[in-house]
Image (cartoon, rainbow over all chains, first blue to last red; front, side, top):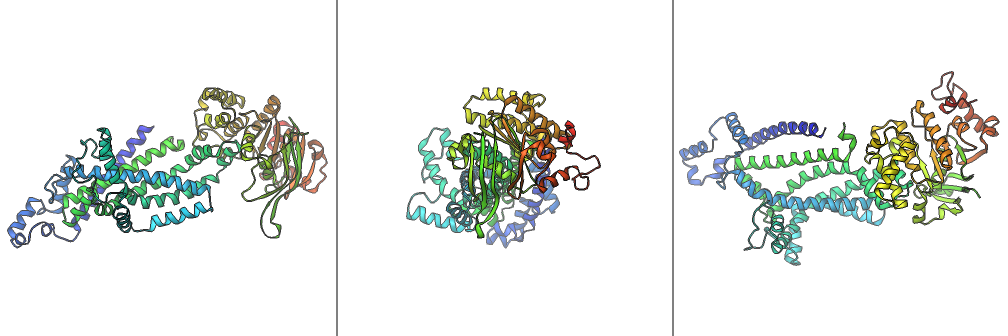
Length: 338
Length: 281
């Protein structure tokens, strides 16, 4: 049953992936702007022969359809092209910057889940009391405050004024990264048993991750509150009270289980906004991740890199949604058999 | 002293002019092992009265009077004592098992979770008890049923499971709130018969809430009739039904036999409880 469910999802995912490639390709190429102009120096640009040669070298002289065909053929073979900026295969770049962003995003997701679900449930259980009001204001703030502003303020207050956290990078300058396994410094440091490096990596990731999580925490708190309130009104919660169960057990077992499906749906969506947020946060915290890479590629019209980032983000997004769909089945037995 | 004594119970929602009275000066008692009916149309306060026995009153409502279970006033109990009463001494079967059972918890967990809380027994002992209970409520293939989820069962089967949940801790009083109303007509009689058998086996008292006086005739010893939050008539079931003293009771009885006002009225329409046992009149 699960296998059929999964295989159906995988087929859908392949179709979706093709659509994403097509859309990114078209969008990347219709954007006004000349990659040659962005990449070549002033002198080279004045020489039509050099420009033509550069275009030919990057395959830009062929019709779009042919370019797309070539891209697809290479893509299937795992070749995303060569970045015009770094002059390295895009895949290598993604392999280097991806884990840094993954680390940032994962910490932000964990913080969002723990704080968002905790505060949302608490607010629902204390409906209209001061705690609920306080969380309402805070979560509204989290959702409405612009990310770049929050990031700048956080750096100013917690790094420059209070000195609690470093303001940039993944480790202190001169500190050697741990041996690469996953590419996430905290994880790799733990795997290597290097507690000092782990501490440093954690210290560096916390502030940007918190800033990144602000929006999703606010979103989740509000959403969890309303979906827990809805579940609290259910007959089965009244029945659980009538059984004489302690409140903690009722909340953990009966209420959370009932509220989980809508919550997970939102987490999937929230993850997307989190990915978008990494571009800003990584720029401000000089975090060498996909967001920074995307920013660089976009400003230099580095087409293969832009395509690579788009596909990477789309792939992550599809994966998250796949996980969400599978989780539905695990949580709700009615979906599992449907 | 009766097992349950409700004495001058009132439940009101606060507001202007003294608020709105949902239940007003209701007194009733249930002796150990007795089956007592509580009848009345929806909105008459039956369910609110019943829930007060579990110490469950609507949010923000004020209560008056006393609800004594085994001599203790339930409305004055501390939360902890209240929890020890609920599910263990007084258990409840709700109207619609489809919403009262948790859709995402397996049957075994739902039957035994309060058993484990109240008695602190092991997982294994609880599992054994779950099988026993499912057998007692005549669920076919209990070993498979404990691991299944509620959506696999029909309405009647779900209500049997809900009854098993209520029976788990061998309560002294079972409150059944319209236990057959949400069920298919064809299975209603079976569930009622099961409740009656279980009462005979266990000796527990039953407070049966229904709007269907035909059901009352079959199962209850004594009967209370409620209207607009008050008890308007009480007495031995047979006597009340044979010669209703209050026009409201008479109209409820009429609704039962009169095809014109009966919900799915055909000329031979009778409530399933009546039809199944041939005791209707």
